[in-house]
Image: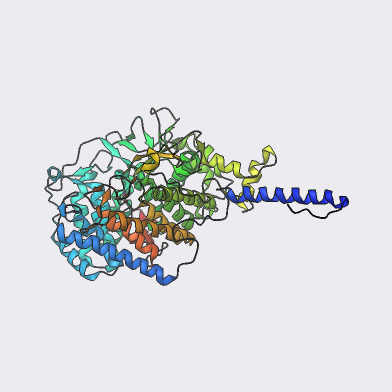
Length: 615
Ligand code: DMJ
């Protein structure tokens, strides 16, 4: 041991120095070992560590184009003109009417990727389809899937080419579907027989299927100049506008009775399965109409306010931010019961919130004639004003963006946590203890006196708050393999996988695309690339790309299907995520729920009310 030749006079000073040194070391370790620190953690694949040059991003976009060609050529070779490819048995199958849904759904992706030959061949399928005839489902055509996949594909291809054949076919299809609106309240039934005009008489209406035609039908009315298409949209908006949303607290409930026009008992509010795209269209309809359709903007704000104050939670250990659903036990009971499931389908929400934060004056809604806190007033929204009051002092734009980033990170982690690098269809979050996100976010603000909550909110508004934000700061993946399970290693992921399949869905990369375009943060691109690499590694077959039965192993059991949305959405969003230029700027184009881009247009009040259009 080395002994320092110090005089007794110097010893106390040395002791102080040693204590100070040790204290600094402990503080440094505490700061740097904490997960929730504000400097980014850079352990993600390839990413965030060293900049990737623009040429490399272009190469990656080309890799996605190659993947699209592989998938589409497999479809052409083994399945066309049937609907979808079975990529294991290399056969076709009819899932939606047998008119060739993959060809229709892929039209605008081909145009974006400049795949002229494939596009020309797909047009032959478009010309040949007989919209009044299907051999499936006793001749019945499902309204929702037909609208978002076929009609959306036709309209976007028309918008990109001005080819009137596509518009004509879109009108023929909408006319064949039209009897679906002959229900007592004019809400679309599940399906229709275009020959007899008979519609499905099941009285249960699912929110996603009731309202996800707004964007397509509004653009169709504008492009064709025909009022009848917009009438269907207007009726839906009028209907929602006079409905009492007291029970579901201002949000559109998931299940409806088509006969009575009322929400059903034991109703639920959700942004996931059976609900998702109708919420999505509230914002998109407002944007599509050149920000003129104010009622949809109001509904979007009511919906997101309820989501932010009631449906967002943090997991107990990792502090993952997630959105879940709530069921109201009886029609008269306002207390909801959250399920704490987090669905892959809900991963579109972060992208939507980012799009809203980017395009709306959330901190100055007066500039568009809205008084935010009054959105909870009136008998139809009774009991909801507390939610607006709770948020009124926040920097609302920032809050929406934080929620977007936090949820998107959780979507990403449900991929990065899995041995195969692809995310499951649904997880069940651990809830001991459950914490509301907004309550935790409030606590995050440093407070020195109990009444300082409002001051703290003002601080946020001024951007003066410091420190990690709950659920938003960087978190590490927590892999947990089958071997770990067998060895009894604790599961540190904070969730159980409740539906283990990976279905080639777009929602996570869709949100990454919107977050990349609206924030410019490259981590969304690099995470998207990690997902694309996993798709290539785990799902590619000789014929195309397969769904997976269980993300817990790699390789894993394959499902024999390649849904058309993989080509329409997943590969399109990945391609646009990596493209250096922006062929579809978000202030000029709106992506439908099936990722079909249609252009924003200006609409006068008269036009919006249906005047000036042909009867
Ligand atoms: C797509 O068909 C659409 O995005 C729809 O709105 C719901 N989800 C599927 C893909 O997951």
